Structure formats: structure tokens, C-alpha cells
Image (cartoon, rainbow, N blue to C red):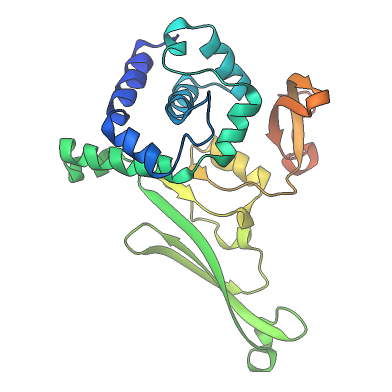
Length: 254
């Protein structure tokens, strides 16, 4: 089931912490099991915990491992791949949000807030905003034919702005935050306006952890087709984002 006994222990302990009357009330509060005859909320939560702790690369891999393990099947009603994907998209996110805050509250009571914050990586947020003005008032900050403006980029650490950069409004968001992401012990959060695949690679190689959103027109370079059902329009593929040109990848490397 798990290559590491510690992972198995963590999995079962998390299930025990989340379960009980709290989970039942939360599911009922948001109608989490409405029209769910098979893949109910508890199965969904347990499967996602397993997927992350086990390090599964795809929903299909998680489904295969759960299906082949009797003990896991007693905890998780194994869904089809399409059910798995559909419930990820449609089940009310507030169920998972409430579980998160419930676990944080329990951890604070058990370990104390000070100790807990020392163990949890700080989250730092990056965002930019543009302040516009009439072109005739600030022609040297021209953005287009009728407007001028400045762009303010801020790194917020949860208590105060840690870094601020002010540039002309026309400067690309990504170029405004050089030097912002330097702390390997933090998790940085920023929106998709900063996307740059080569930069993502550089951050990953430097051990910088970050969370961001993908773009709708993201370039996807397929790495490995795992399986497909064209007649159902279902494709399970391991991919990397970006093209070889934008990422400057050696065509012979993986």
C-alpha cells in the first residue's frame, strides 16, 4: 500500500482526525452527497489524501492502486476516472475549506499557536496594481495613446508589505518582481499574470515553492500518453507545460 510506513501512519491518522461527527455535519451542511450514489464525500476526501501522500501522478494511477488494495477499498468506494474528475470540479469546495480550518484549529489547541506557526511554512502573496492618470499629467509614464500610469508590485507576508517595486505601468508584471522570491522556507502565491515557464523551471531548480493558476491558452507539450478512450473523449496523459522554444529544452532530454 505504502512504500514508507510513516506515510501509512500519516494517512490513517489524518482520516481519524477528519472523521467523526464534524465531518458528517459538514457534508450535510453543504449537501456534499447530493446525487452521489457511489463516490460519496468521505471516499473523495480519503482518495485525495491517498493520492497526495502516495505521490500518484494521475487519477488513473490512484484508481488503480486503490482498486488493487482490499484495505483501501474498505475506506474508498473506487470511482471511475470520469467520476473522479467530475467530482473534483463540482463538489462544493467549502467542505474542504471547513476541514482545513477544523484541522488548523485542532492543531493550535494541541500544539499551541506559536509552535504550530513555526512548523507551517509562511505563505507570501505577490500582486500588482496599476494607478492610472491622464496622459497629459504624466507623459513620461505613457501606457497607450490616452493614458499614463504606474504599476506597484507588492510582496505581502501576512503582516506587512515585505517588498514593493514601483515601475511604469506598461512594464510586464513578470519583470516587476525580480528579487521577490528568495525565501526557500516560504510558499509564494501569485496569479497567472506572472506566468513564464522558463521562470517556473528556475524557481523549481532553486527550491522555491510557489502556487499559481494555469492560463486558459497554456501551451502543453505531451510527455507520455498513459491511456485514452477517444469515443468517450477521455485522455489520461502525463504532460509538462510550455513548448521547447519557450522553455529551451534539449529535445533529447526528459
